[in-house]
Image 1 (cartoon, one colour):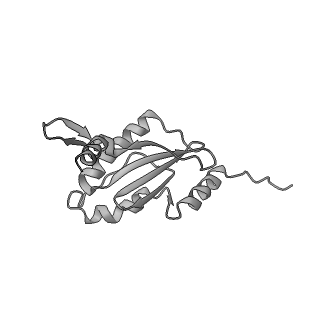
Image 2 (cartoon, helix red, strand yellow):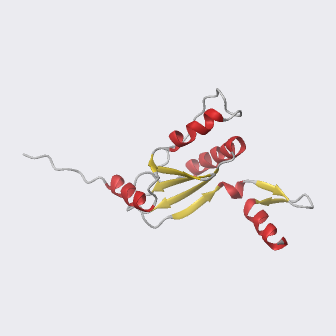
Image 3 (cartoon, helix red, strand yellow):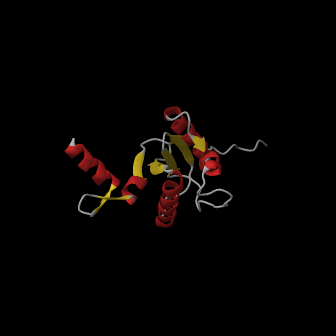
Length: 143
């Protein structure tokens, strides 16, 4: 009797994601960051862990994009909190921004649910703290 093969929805979703973003790596966030960490004076010789594993990741310029496929692991409040903390550390030490997108179970319908830009405070001329987005808007108004 032949054993019935179980369909791998996670792999299908990842492959669809890869069609849109060929450079995306499955569970590869730390592999992407490791060379940057090794070059960083801030983290030199220090061992650390992110505290979460995204379904996929890609680095483009100074932005690390993480993907969560809803069928594989739900993006809980606790996980989002860990991502936020990690994003702050990554920006402080490596000047890399992090954004998180969730996709449906097919790896489609990407929706951004987090960007570290909004966790970074920038003082304006009067000393008031603005989010990165507010800071960019202010710069555009001044042009």
